[in-house]
Image (cartoon, rainbow, N blue to C red; front, side, top):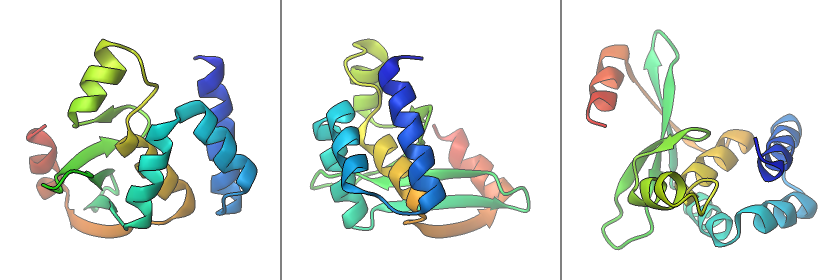
Length: 132
C-alpha cells in the first residue's frame, strides 16, 4: 500500500470515529486526491449517495450519482471498485488516480453516515450485482 493510501486510510478512520470532518482532514484529503475529492464533496452535498443493503444478510453496496447531465448512478464498493468509466480508465488502466470521485463520495458518506438507505432482499441485491 502506498504512503498516500496509508495516510488517507488513517484520516478515514479518524472521521469515522469522530463522525465529523475537520479542516485538516479536508485539506489532507484534497492534497491526496485533488479534484476528485472536490467532485466527491459536491456529490455528497447534493445528497447523491445511497447505501443499498440486502436483508437479512446486511451485505451492502453504495449507489453514487454521477455529475453529468444524464445523472447516471454507479455501483461502488468504496475501497475496491466502481462501475464508472473513470475507475477502469484512470484507476485500473493508467493508474493515474488512487480512486474515482464516486468511491471518494461513498467513502466520505460512509465515514460520516451521510447517505440515504435503501433496503432490499438479498435476492434483489444479488440481481443488481449480477448486472455489473
